[in-house]
Length: 354
Image 1: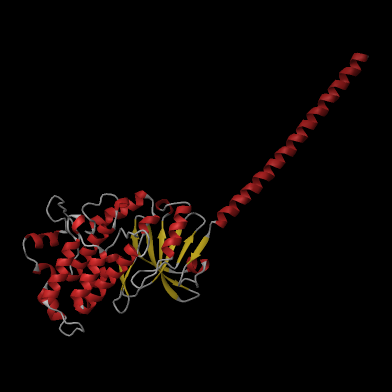
Image 2: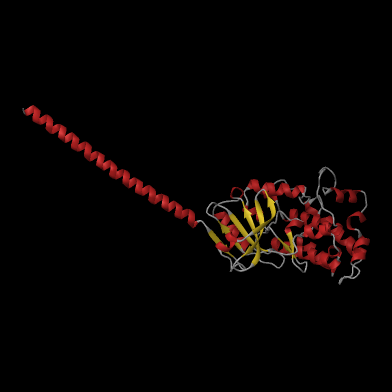
């Protein structure tokens, strides 16, 4: 009898212990679930908090809703992003929105610091950064003013009378040089453009030039930056010594400036379809052939420029055109050490043109 009672008691005790353990486990499980839900909510909050808009001088009227809801027209594409012409509904202003693919951009505090730095740069011949939006999935948008005359490339290719007026050539050349001088000399450390080309020179209604994409390669990861450099090389703007974007410097910017000056004088596109870097002149084909064949007039067409500038505000002589051509060739020297610096280029342009 005693054994029976002890057996029943033991069984009851074991059942009680099992029920108690099961109950405790359920409580722990529910607690863990509530913690998981809470932590996931915190994560969602963290993601939502990453949506941010930095506003700089001139962009005080920007809001996140304005930027995201603005109807946009694609006006340019690259491997690292897309450029939109967008109408902001609330302010009724047209802006340029540059979308950068998350996979192509740099990350972390370094990116934020660089954006803050670029957002403070202001000069009459530089396209200002008005705002920088970061989305919840890492997408990034740079907001800039829109310039109705488009790029210098479009201006030159249109071939109307305006692009052969000496006053416009002077204004554009000196404006680009002034903007580049500010980048190279206004800070403790020079700001290297790294992708200077006629497509990145925008014009307003008075043909005043504005350099765009200043320091854009600093926001990209090394792979995307290198793709940018290769694209620049295919278009004829890359200095011969430049192998990697991280090696871009003031003298490689000067080379690109020289190509732009030659474009302005010739009206021709500097695409280098069959580069031969072993030659004395690492220049786009039409430029190299003209120089090596001593057919300088093929480049700057002095008679044509003189004829079209007859009624211009600033008189021009063939000597002036030749001096600008010689300066451009000095900028495009295959030897980086003999290229002039930007202050020398600007001083020489002002001496020739005014």
